Length: 170
Image (cartoon, rainbow, N blue to C red; front, side, top):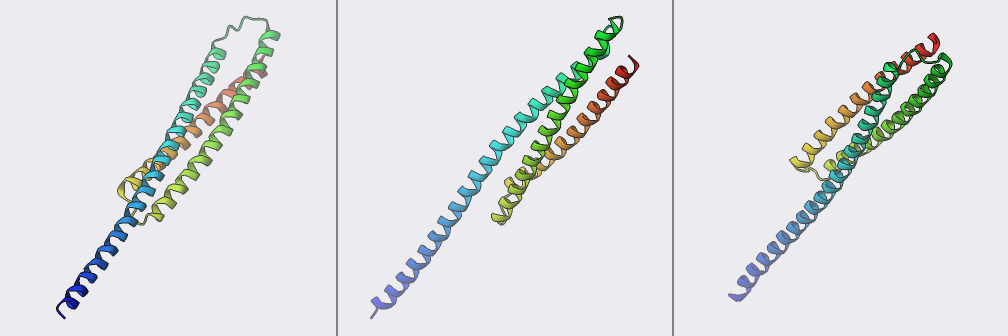
């Protein structure tokens, strides 16, 4: 008879231990999934940062073209100069359109990434401070990219206006 309460206590302890181990295994699986998601998001962030760097290089190239155009010798044959200005204007407009499309694509990707981060954070419940911090950092990066995009658009619009004025004056 003394074995029955002892067995019952052991069985109860074994059941609690199994429940605790099951809960721990679920927590480990959740943490692994969150880690994998975080690593994927970091890789995507690095890719987007690389693309932003490429866009910045393209922007620098456009600035150099505008500077070269503004420093060009005005004593050249007016017909040749006018044709060259038209060609450069067309090239700048084409580059502007390309930049505009790239920024729109980049913005769409950033918004999708932001949505996935929000969903990931919501799916993980508390989600951890690391994911929330990374989410905040990505939101700042998105805002910076949007501001940079607006600045580039303004500068390129100004350059195109100047070129159109130069073509009109020639």
